[in-house]
Length: 311
Image (cartoon, rainbow, N blue to C red; front, side, top):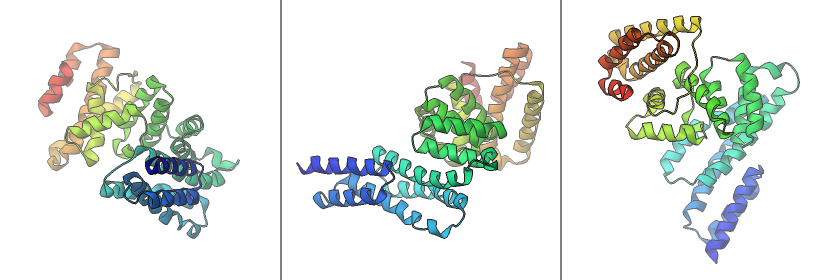
């Protein structure tokens, strides 16, 4: 009986969080704790909610609504560190908290967005889109992120958020194209832990199981995304893009020779560019000699990736 009551109180608390009523959520969780003071999910949920409430208490310190919203979103990295420290995780709790936190930030960003010049500010549009995604409103997230990308066509962070929303809306082809683009442009600018779609979460976890962590994880994701067929949707390069790609390859080859300590990050970034160049030669020029030349470059810097790519 007590277990059923506790589960009911937990669910009501999560419903309150999704309705942005954190005070009621906290009371319900305290009530559940009084019934079962060792219940792991109740303890976890209270710890997480109190962590965020402690941060939200600081919001009155910010007179500018953009700064308020920005402060809330800036706390996610610290929150992830907190989650890693306390260990156990409960997905329903995290989904409810995400809805509460992003809805709270959204209120501030909407005040800034208004109906004037800020409607064309890509930074604000990105934040609004990100908040709608976190709050679970994917259609509105798509609307604002598509507006943002018109102003920031080569921004990896914005592209990754848009790709994530497309995946959540089951627009898989568009998602794969945009994720591949985002990881090419700026893998370090992508907040992997904020990605919600199973498409990218499974790939992230698979690459992590290979032993890659931190900055290196983001660099290797597009490599294995290609090898595993996740980033299977490709596009033709424009002449100016091909020129920039070749220049980027030359720069990375030089950097690896001159800065061997940077190789753990630069090597996968270079391999990813080789993959793009091979795609171009195969899909546009169909020159087997140039394909083989690029394949041999991969073989020199990583024979295992060469063998896997070839097979």
